[in-house]
Image (cartoon, rainbow, N blue to C red; front, side, top):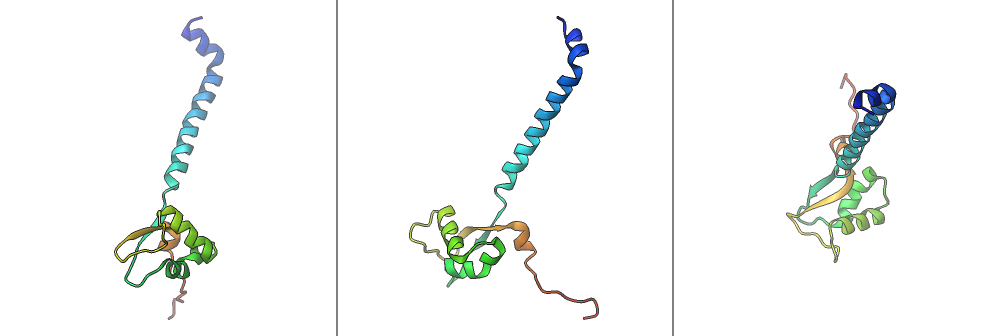
Length: 109
C-alpha cells in the first residue's frame, strides 16, 4: 500500500488523530504551566507563618492551620520559623493577590 492509498482511505482518521495529539500537548503544557502560579511573598521583620495566615488564608480558601501547614511543607520549613528577607511561596494564586483591593469606590466619591 502506498502513502497515497493510505491517505485516500484514512485521511479523516489521520487528521483526527493528529488533531487529538496537538490538543493533548497544548492541554498538558497549559496544566503544567498553571501549576506554578502561586504567589511568592517577602518576609518582613516580625512576620510569622501565622501572621501570613491571618493576611492571606482567606484568599486561599484554607483554614489558618491548613495554610501554615501547606507553607511549611512547600517551603521545606522544618522548624516553622521564617526570617526577614526570605521569600516564601503561599497558596494564593497570583491573580487573587493582584486583585486584593476589595474596597468599592463609587463613581461620585
